Length: 563
Image (tube, rainbow, N blue to C red; front, side, top):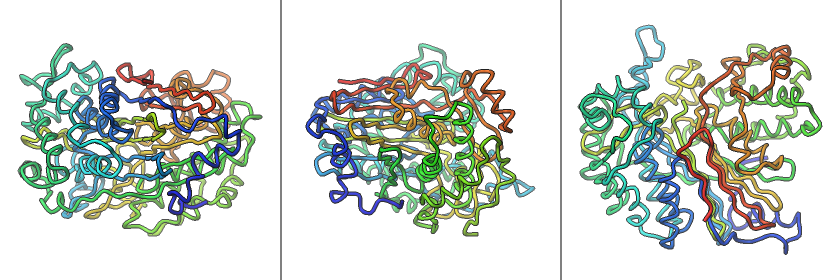
């Protein structure tokens, strides 16, 4: 198993042609004839359908959903951040991966992220302009519209511009996020003016208007990439960042490029899994875990032993995640090894049938020397075009720094670098020099947008959730393969292991008392975790030609809609 070679028309069988050959081809639909969108906010889902109604396709809808989420949920994503998106274009069976991840500014210096003891300075890494990478989302939206969409960018951005200008009433989660970050928001005048009106956390019923952001989006709509990465917007971004101690330059913005990459693909139990390549760490980890699990008959195992081997596979994949992975434009990674079923055979052989392996007992991988405030949406349109896109600013409201008169909240993705090798970041993940910061380099991400392709069933899946993105998407893939519908996938309880810390995070109610005791007796240290990502899933039953869309019930404002 390797990275997909080309994965274009010649590999169209990867998607539907070969998949349909496993069943009766005449019984499966080639196009849905209607569309489905699932996102974390009903305004974003409706924006996507508004653009589809104007003649757009799934990629135009993705621009509308992304930009609207930037307006209505700036605590989770925004044009001051980045995204990764998996695309499938039905007309020529082209599948591809859009990497609009942030990059480190050219003047990055790891010393500014250290305290006097040489440990990560959490404040510098998480708050203010030094925490921010150069945004990729604006360039990514322009790229998707120009290369895959049907409509002018002005049409696809119109819903977001309208909502930013006219305002909306934020939900309680939005207001709660302001409460959590109020002390940092208050440090920066533009942030406080935008989110702390009158110097206080706003109350329910507040109408949130963002005229500066609307103007920034209009410049993007009018001028494309130049409307954000050059001219007045770029000058204001750089000037405000420098005035607050940042190190951005106009050249950093001008040199940003979207990357189109080859997805990772693998076979698992008769399904084709298409997922994210580096600089996402998610696809590699998911593939490694599934390769390990392929050696077990999970269906015949009781819940205790099935959970045990899944946790042990997670533990080993995250060990490799920490040591090997980084930006493929800067780091040579042993992907052929990590994605090989033979490598998985060796890892599986180290798993004891009834006893957890302490992470401290696993040998270190031979590397080359590496919150929950993200969002995801899924789309299938009437022609069968598909988008799985995960967007982020990292922590709630990113760096909490609004860049002057742009209205743009900057990300705090610099913390996703291994600022100090083997020291944990905000999500407890550790990395090696493979993920060390360097000018122009993309920081490693857990974002894992994925497609699951069966003989007559298809799923578009992804989730926010920091380091738990990887395991949540994995568990969603397994649930879909086991026959669950979209609502069942997003609602199922979750568990997670990431090698270090050596604990199993579980959602309350995931296991009954007997299962919990049995897993603890095996040596797994289970701890209840309250914060999980909000998954959004779209499925297509090609035999019945039925679309289904579901938004995570943990997020009441989300909307999965078929129309």
